[in-house]
Structures are given as C-alpha cells and as structure tokens.
Length: 335
Image 1: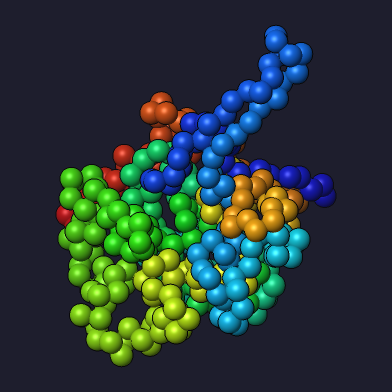
Image 2 (image 1 turned 120 degrees about the horizontal axis):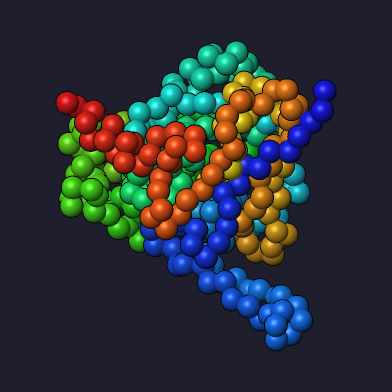
C-alpha cells in the first residue's frame, strides 16, 4: 500500500483572488535571464492571500489565558501539522455552520469526537470549488461562527483548516457590519448584503452576525450567555467570533484550503502538512498545505483545474457547481 502527497493549496499568482479590501499582489523581477543570467523575483502582497495560516495575534491582543496573543514565530513548529481528518459539511448557500452541523458530520462519518483531541480538522463545504474573484466565494460563502468555534475548543483540536474565504461566515467579518473596517458590501441586488440576508433568512437569523440586532431581538442576557466569554476579554462578540474562540484558545487556523481537497475521503485519517514561515512577529503566513495518504483511499474525482480572470467558474472540468449556479440556488431558495 503506497502513500501519495495530495496538494490542498490554491495556486498563487499576481492574479490570485483575494479578500475584498486586500491589495493586489505585485510580482516583479530583480534579475532576468536575458539581462542578468539568472531569474530573481520579488513579491509584495498581504500574507493572508490565498491558502494561508492565521496566528492568534492576527485578530486579538490577548488570549483567554490573559497572556499577550502569540505571533507566528511563537507557535509550535507542528501547530498546523499532524494527524488529520476531513469532514464534509452539508450546508446551504450562505449558511451558518454550527455545532449541530459538526455533530451531524461526525455521526455521518463514524467519527468519535473524543478522537479529535490534538488533531487537525479539515472542513470540506464545497466552497473551495468556487474560489475566484466573485461574490459567490466572498460575499455569499457558507461559514462558521461562535457555536462552531466553541465546538472546536470543546473537542480540543490543534488546528482547523477551512475551504472558504475565512474562519468565519462573511457576515461575521468586515464584509458585513462588524469591525472598525466594516464595509457592509453591496450584493448582487445592489443592496447591502446585510439586507439581502435578512430578506432570505429572516431578522432572527441575521441577528447572529450583529451585536446590536442580537441584543434587540434576544436581550442582553441572551447575548451575554452566547458571546460573553469574548466580551469579557475585551472582544466584540459578533466580530469574527470563530477566529477568536479558536485562536484565543491556541487552536490555529488555515483559510482557503483548496487544491485537490475532494480527493481526500471524509472520515479517513491521514497526515496533514502545513508550515508557515518562521516569521518573527508574524500575524499569519501563506503556506503550502499537503495531505499524505494511502493511494487506494483517494476519491476517484478529476484533478482540480483553475480558471481565473473571468475565463470561467467551475466549468466542465469536474469542479462542481459554477458560481452562477450557486448564486441561483441562493436567491431562489424561497421560491
């Protein structure tokens, strides 16, 4: 039985899709073959571009133990690496992944939650198939929140790698109505995505992402019960709560997991390798994520292909739904 390496990383280039307010990567040459006899390139970009790791300092000043949040160089060398398992999450477009979804996935694939302690969990929501410069991938991604974050902490995972745009649902981020850099982006209808979500899912569902709305609908006591552990250490509860529950308890995260993730079967253990740069005082870092797994366990799916720059999303190469089909399923959900 031979083992093989499977790439779980989106390819990097100057044209790589990136988070809505991130700068475009600049790739330049210091030397070229014709002029200097060598090729030497340099890159300027945000280190949270493409497939990358987050360190605690990225989102918080202090962790739950009261100590200063750690930088990349302060995390153990194997923080993002180890025995791993994939869970496929059954979630509707733009859905909020909760502890119930995670419980259901463990039951479906016969995973004892007691076995997750100290392991790496990779989530396959299908979002990685839509990786492109699109509203489908960024504005309307399915994603996690405070309940999922607490589930990761309860099960004492060491790392969670997600195949979406962030460790949190987009409405928990500055794309919605959270954070000092909040954008409340306009959606496909020309209205803010917060208003679109309310129309599709209802005000009570939207309140999960908005501190003031949650308190208005459910009351301060209910808010304190759900988000109080975050607020008690000086954190805005609805602003990237899954990030902060995880990272504040020493569980690191990987965002934009991709590549041939669909080749890795759910519920089967394998080795996950991911090493960021040994970056002194780093907040996060692009990384190469790889699975090492028995070849006969691989799912029989086509190799992942990529088309960026408006040349097509998820076409007939086997990448699954297109961004357009995803959007149609989202906006037709109530029809």
